[in-house]
Length: 307
Image 1 (cartoon, rainbow, N blue to C red):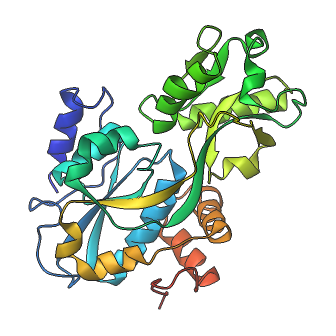
Image 2: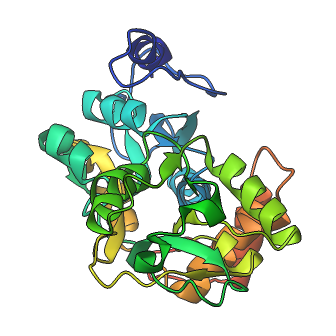
């Protein structure tokens, strides 16, 4: 894996101004072109954004599974979706374990889809939302936000600027509900959004944030999704592992394992909670995955158990 290619993409501004963060090292041979099927001399690179905890959790699960097939797995921790999709299309990243290609990342798929391949759907029914604290009894729909910007300091608290959720909120939801003139979508990071949300709830203040399901924060914080009668946040979609084009043909055994990954709400919820919360202070989440597999040995048909 030639990490400098990814860094160069960020440096020249092809996909945004933020560069790689915390990359874990690479090989000079690059991506999936290292050799035969999982025989111990193969290297596969997984790209993920740590603040997007579905990708974080599934990346470490997939790392565990691929290592059991004999792969050397490298984790590329990125900061922007654009960098990730560009690296995936170019073959500098082999797999994006948790993409939202149907709605949330549709613009990236339009740009890069011909250079990618879909390895399956591991979770059905993911949705984008706007949410408020449950104590806000008089705000139950996105439509209820109109004319009430003063209560929220004229802000909808969002996440990363490059997130598909940000694009959908700005280009679809806000215009549909005529919020453009009243509100600014304040973007920064998922962590910053959650900190702001937590502070507001602690003080019983009014706040509206962009969220999504599945996401552990929906259970950790006392929030409710706002109804979306116009469907402006998009229809439910699946979460997919995506690979650079041709990867499945070169790695059929691994591709078959990935295609068999299917997580229901209970399995996914426990995976994310274990990785993100129970092992929050661990840089290497391997122990979290070992614990989760022991607790969920039948989570999906192709799951490789612990020894």
